[in-house]
Image (cartoon, rainbow, N blue to C red):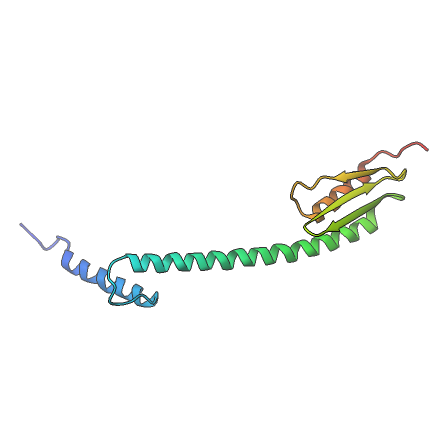
Length: 136
């Protein structure tokens, strides 16, 4: 039987052990603590930290983006609302309300459904612009 083509399992095992030792060292695991568990736990911790960083980055980015979008929506309202229409934004801690007010003074609450205020402001503008003029 020709063993020249057979895999060298001993060499593969040694190479895997050396690679795991390098990974363990890079992850800061205790070299005297063997097995895969310390490595797996270190990877879990890194993933959790990464997820926290990503979530914080997305939250900061979303907040900053929404603040800019609110500014753009307010500027749009000032430029595009039909004559005698207005948008009222009422805020209190933890919540807020966007209302469209027609020329006759009728207020309509713009539903938010958890969306951003900028989307509600733009929805109010769109509703005002698409409303048919009422006979006086």
